[in-house]
Length: 358
Image (cartoon, rainbow, N blue to C red; front, top):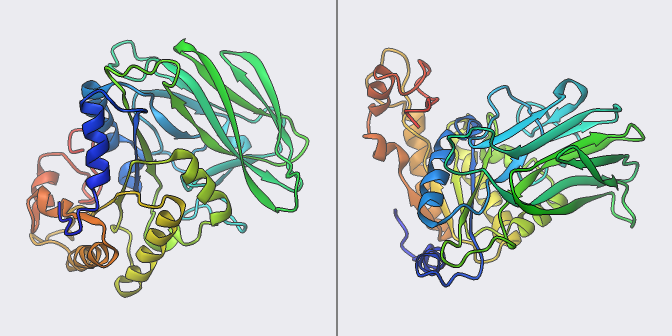
């Protein structure tokens, strides 16, 4: 990791507190990525490793929408009646008002019975993801917002209005539901009296279950199909910022760059999003990962465009005083993806990692 200013020091200190069993709360990491992260393969593996060592503080964030068929998470159970929703994302399903939330996707409907749900894993062999003590549900408040009802374990616990009460056109709505530690599921049902936009929910295993012996780790996997830094500037901050404040990350990882079509302007877009992150989370440690290696069919060398993007991301990290890690170099450097593809670790596109490749 290249970190000339020791920007990751606050994160390392919090890791040390967790290791020494003196942490006041669980450690929370947010990881932004593109289509490679929509499957939660890399982030899911990392989550399991960290939680096996320091404790399971819950799965963390899951978006209650499905703009892409590839969107799924490890060690969690989710579903929805997605045909009854409009699916919003700043990349493939653009919304005019730009209110996608901090995770860059949302589902909106005014259809009676449109529903989305998330809960603990149903895989009995899973080592993590089996218990929660809290759901934190995020949604959009808007002028003519409708209402939805919430069920936990198929019992109604609340009816929520999404109308704004003040002068603001849009606001972040948050509802928190506490449950006894164990397996649980939350379901959201649109009531049909106006538009309802749901961002998602976190699955938390604290504070009721807080154990100083194993304070626990959460890792929010924030993958969005075709995401790049330019499209992150298409997201409104009036809802994104309070969402980030609410998640209160101890580290933010940015794994983007594969979808950069025009290299020169990308530097400005990246710096713009970094400034938004720092504004929402002052002092938060940030780690920029380069995109992985890729190559054109028939070539044995890396695509020159991806090399240029990586050099640019290294410069952005240095200019902004944040950390940088060269993911392509870790894969093996020039043309390394060819070997990955031959071993079945990526698709034939030389971009997308399978479960074992991840």
